[in-house]
Image (cartoon, rainbow, N blue to C red; front, side):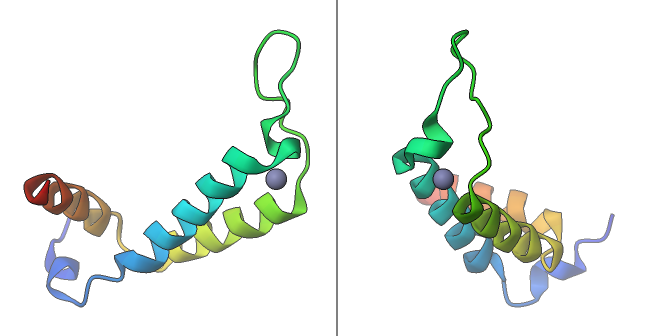
Length: 79
Ligand SMILES: [Zn+2]
C-alpha cells in the first residue's frame, strides 16, 4: 500500500468522466433501464453501455485505486 501515486498528477478526471458518461447513459437509455417483473435491472446487452463501461475500466486500470479515495476525500472537503 504505497501512497506515492498520490503525488503524481491526479489522473482522476478520465475515471470520473467515464463514470459520469456511463451513469448518464444508463439513466437515459431505455435498454439499460429495462427492469424485470421483480423490479431488478434486466441487464440487457447494450453496446453503448459496454463501450462506456470498457472506457471506465480502462481509465480505472491506468489509475491507482488510492487516487479514487483521495479524490473522494478532497471532494468532501470541498463540499
Ligand atoms: Zn444503454
